[in-house]
Image (cartoon, rainbow, N blue to C red; front, side):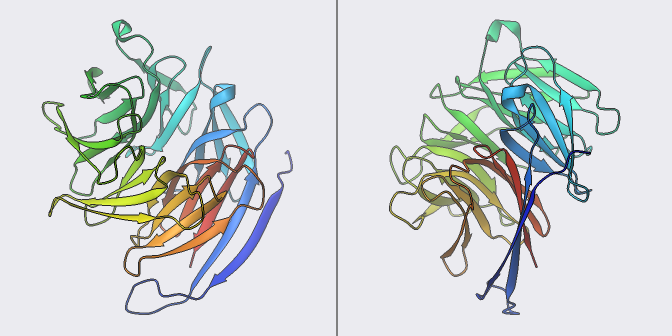
Length: 324
């Protein structure tokens, strides 16, 4: 078995988590280097079982990391494959937006069998980006060339809609109550999707031309937005139809990915600072976790309780932040 270089750093941060206990948080980081022919991870996802999946976009493969052993297995996704996004679905399987073949792909976690649902041929290349499941078991996805769509895996029915302002649909997420929102990078807005008709309603962030890149929901249904152009993180509250915005620390932040953990702490990747950043909405304070290598370029963040995973596309590593 190939030996993986594992880098372990322990950071003890003395700050309030916003909970009544006032507990001191311990955050440890562990980095897993990836093999050649299956490196340069774009997106990453972790299942309830702790197995980590990532898209090796340049190699046309889906990677599987077992963090307990450090072993990496690679699943080829076919000729011309260039996978972008990956999430673990409610069935426990990794689901992929496969940009090279213009398909939504499921990989069986046991047999590694690849099943593909191509987009309608008339649509042409759409630059597939990210996907999410709604509460009805359907997959919603985005394409930067100006589309968003829905797949029902049970029937194979797929529908694709033109985004209301053309190019830009990027990150997409589902709230605890089942609503689906996507972000438009080129369009600098977010949108809520009608789950029945597919119609998208645009919601304008307060900062113009901010470059909304990815979205994630907290436990209250607030939509957190990473703003690439402005270097902000913003939050939209559908209940009050209101926004709040914060600038990331540093001189020239570039906010790429966003993820909200089980404690409603907001995690972001800042390409300007070459760091992961954690934001506490209760205290409105940031904590910065710089990468120990230059050019980390974290494009996606996902996690499970106690763990936040980031894909360092620039260093061919997966990094986990474990919180106690």
